[in-house]
Length: 144
Image 1 (cartoon, one colour):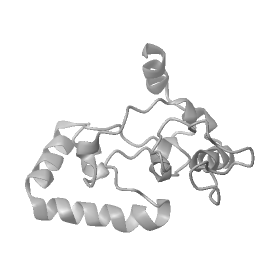
Image 2 (cartoon, rainbow, N blue to C red):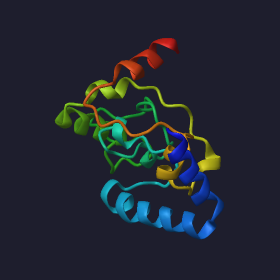
Image 3 (tube, rainbow, N blue to C red):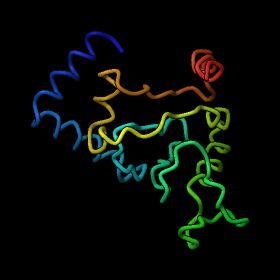
Image 4 (cartoon, rainbow, N blue to C red):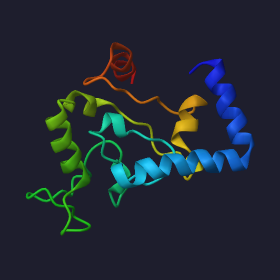
């Protein structure tokens, strides 16, 4: 991000009351709309606006291999696999190409922090409003 956003995020993060307000504002929107799990490292815009942290195994890069033939979760057979939902929603939104993005493992130190402030501080990837991966994101994929 820019020096301005990094400075703003630094200021907010240094003041616990401001950080709580930012986190509250974020959770008021993201929890009811996206069923956000408050990981502090949001990847909604890459996964069909569906939180992959809802997976009981908290897998962020595709299904675990235990998905049943009917699309249900191996841990909770009464539920659809979250990755089945992500794939279906990505199809409907024309965003399946974004599912090729590899996400780094969850940094547990960022749990219960504001993903918005973490983006501004440059700690995590910004949201991606494109339907497919950008040239920059594709370049990152090829390097790995």
